[in-house]
Length: 342
Image (cartoon, rainbow, N blue to C red; front, side, top):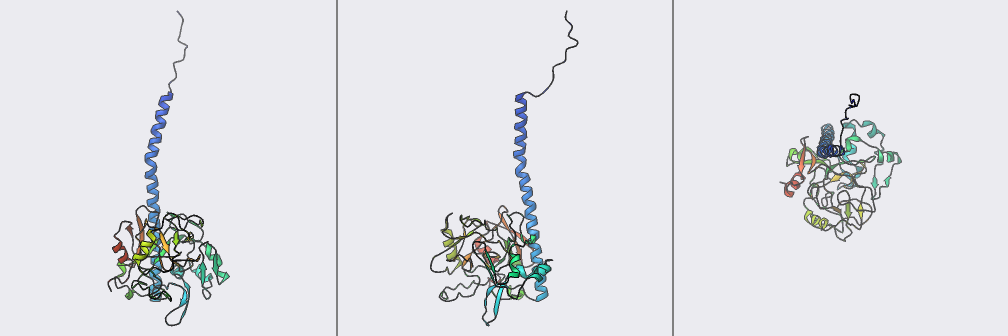
């Protein structure tokens, strides 16, 4: 009889089938866990985005307490009293109140007029201010969005009027009058006070957020960019603007792709939005701009975010609350007006 005592026992291990089953289970677990991880990360980013908006609102309140009025909003020009106003953006004015006094005092605010065209090239009357075109203030950037040097996601509320910059457009469009013009939390070339918010500060949106432009001047992104309308007559009411924006498809003859790429200038291209369209609107934003310079005065520039289903809004009482993209449009427009019941 042959002895087999010195033979090794058979080794245990995975068969190919068992290995494939194990890999399949691991892949399934990853597929199940990944959305939860991504959701948790976005939830964290959304909270941080709201916290930054809260700090901006606190800085605005500190400014108002110190100066007895809210920051001025002006893209430059002469007011009804003949006084010349430079390009004044609230995001600049509140810098000393958000621990950015060094940036504020390095600026040349005596020669402040500026523009920032649709193709991203900055023009400032003072070369001293050029460095700030790409100066990043992290407080002005929402971590949920793609960030660029000097960009800002946070914008001031200019109300519900089709021309939210002025009470009545200049000739030859003076007949095109919307009584809601200038009814937002900021009014062109005017220093508003708490008493001007007759709807109540807690009921009035002061700031919200908007995704920045994609920076691609050759391709229209309906979510990030806005179409520049080239028709001959501006749109007199919010309803007219909404109807016109609704006709825009994924292709626009002219569009602005650099929105929000700077916090320097008072412009609906970069630092302001309105309540004409609902938040996260599926209708593309549009502006009556026949030129390459996106002043975006006669325009619908809506609040937009990367947060699923909501945008964050800072209210006049200092709170920051989420607003659903399914909010009733009439309610949203009332929230965008400081005096809708006057």
